[in-house]
Image 1: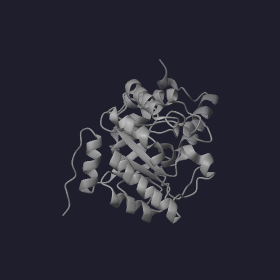
Image 2 (image 1 turned 135 degrees about the vertical axis):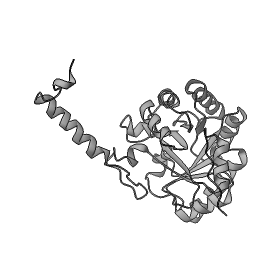
Image 3 (image 1 turned 120 degrees about the horizontal axis):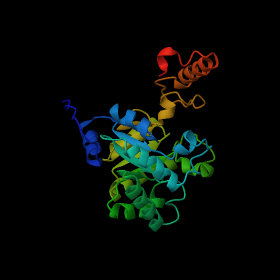
Image 4 (image 1 turned 180 degrees about the vertical axis):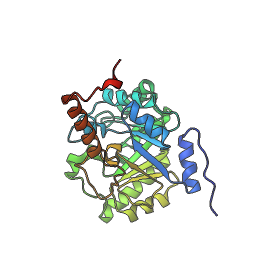
Length: 272
């Protein structure tokens, strides 16, 4: 028996758990600035992630490691000002929570107070359990992140698919169940086998959002620059490009430059 889709005027952590319970898939995209966030929210995306991927797509760094807490708060503040419906989740950047649980709490409090965001996201399992508990005890919602964790790229040495071996797969399942038990409202699974991701989603009651984790999970997330085709150098298997904005924008900007050079712009109707 199908359940009628509920019209959510405002997405909350409770909304996402209801969606999973009702079999409704959850949409999630990144945004890092006011204008893009306004478009994403108006289009009806449920969760807007202010990801530390801003380090790559906004600042041009090779990894997510260089972005700072202050920079994440700046991006998050811009996004929050644009959003009326979606749930805004902000990544805790590398170095802002790994050393101890008190620092993790301080970083989370700064994000919530200074940006107005609705939740934070942390990478890792049992090794950051105490930090997650301390953040949750302060009343701050937490989204987990398992599988490929980009902040640990130098530990892994590669962006290849994670948890293909039985030992790592079992740890991932245990970590996901632990994240649910301590009180996380959702978990992101990145770049793991689809069968394993489905097994995880079926084993816990909180939503599992996938990126490169197949269709058996409760929702999907992509980096907006990738799905819009603004970045033409990144083509993993899991990415579906809905537009080719790199080509379209290059064409438009080249035409603008040519029109200025030829004195075609501005024309008589475009001046006072």
